[in-house]
Length: 159
Figure 1 (cartoon, helix red, strand yellow):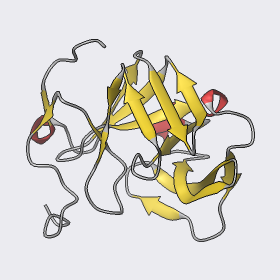
Figure 2 (cartoon, rainbow, N blue to C red; figure 1 turned 45 degrees about the horizontal axis):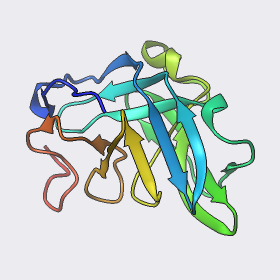
Figure 3 (cartoon, one colour; figure 1 turned 60 degrees about the horizontal axis):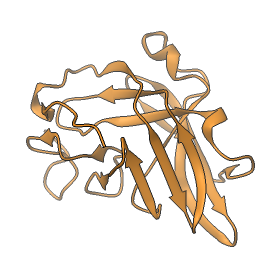
């Protein structure tokens, strides 16, 4: 496990920054390895832990199933479409999302998928198990190097 430098979420910009991440990411769900990559993007937004976007090719074939239900709109990245994550007999409904045609500033996110850590068995970043961002809306991943007031708990939606 490599030590990542300390980052305070209050120092992240708005609008969010996009940056390459070359560390290892492994995701397990229902006992299955569902994604693994050494290349991803991080979105860094004020008061949010990083949201990681993995190449769609890093997901095991068949684990991402287009989800029924509405799309959502991010004021920065555009229209998000959702996937259920399916492994064996388990389904994590609407646990992953993508921007099929992201806004130009975030065009690198095309063909990349983010996912919520909470319904997964395990999400590892450089060998460290992540903690899901609090709340049921945001998809950031908290690692030991992340500090500061993190949005997501009750009462934090309008910071």
